[in-house]
Image (cartoon, rainbow, N blue to C red; front, side):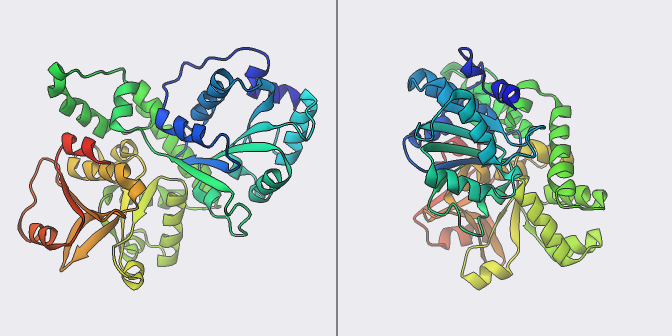
Length: 387
């Protein structure tokens, strides 16, 4: 095990400098929590940049905070060779390597922590008993489902989303001056087609995105849940991508796929757990929210475009608006047979109309609905002004 742990932690033996593009929004959030006791959990779509972010943050800790490198420990808990050890046993081995007493403060970075069945209890024990600061990551939202409340009140969640348009430009090495502002629309359309998976943005290799999707579907859904009919899962996901931005009827999905409604609901939860999709409830009282169909959005529009092609730009645009305002916990507004895309916690009503206008009955409902603020998002300029 010792050799493997040294490979995970090159800063124990040498200076490190990573040539990665910085995602400062998330790095700054991690930094603000550095001196707090909370367990910080990074979560989000597989290969969205969690491990890269951890390594960039470790570099920042060493260079900016002058933290002793041997007091920083990183391990990927899905690594071959560690599967028979508990988290506590791995950390004990780390302490032995550096002769660190139990009282010494250490910084733990536990990547893909949800691969361990009892991780919540082990993290709680570390939190309660050790002089440790813990950052953990997971590509599954199951990390948030702490049924025995081991981590309640102890954790802070940071969810990584696909690259924003501004980050997309940075990753592509594009700077748009005022003289070239006419190019913003051109690059935004490229962003709509490519999406925000970092490695795909950097390389443009469509095979990378296809392999990522296969990894998630086959490893994190089919294998993880023992699903025998692989084709149904892939067909289901294709249907979801075609319906992104629309209300989803589980009854119709079940009929199309010739499966039970309960099975359709369970499979949908698997796609949510892996961040391949997000669901949005209807605004209203509890019974309205529970009885009404949810709207579906893709976790990344580049993945959506693999299945649907880049043809319904209005749906892609709405999906990107959702990802940008997701932090506001929006619901969709529905009245008299008319739907308005989003109503946020800040009492803002939002309708997306990519290069088109709000007209007719929809405009009447939009105008007559009481809201603190009302926005019609028609273009990239409107999009970039969203909070």
